[in-house]
Length: 86
Image 1 (cartoon, rainbow, N blue to C red):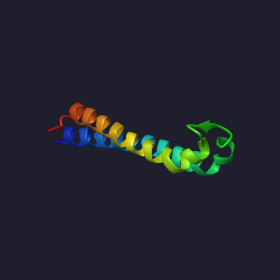
Image 2: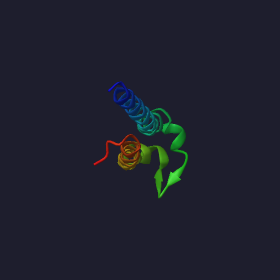
Image 3: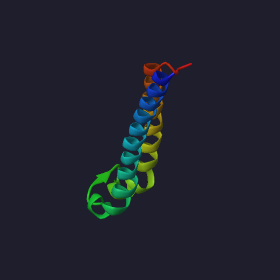
Image 4: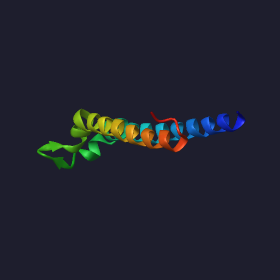
């Protein structure tokens, strides 16, 4: 029974590591690029729009959706690794 608890602790530790990394990426894109570095990024154009504006209005949303799919793939892989998949 203790082996199962150890496995679940490892599972949650890896899960939290994934969450921390993915949320850090989202924070970087939405807050740092969209708010703090907006003036520097506005010197670059993307599709006719300033890059800082794009990150603030669209980029963080696109990145968030991509991160959802990345998290789904990572969790499916993690579930299979620890034998908790369906």
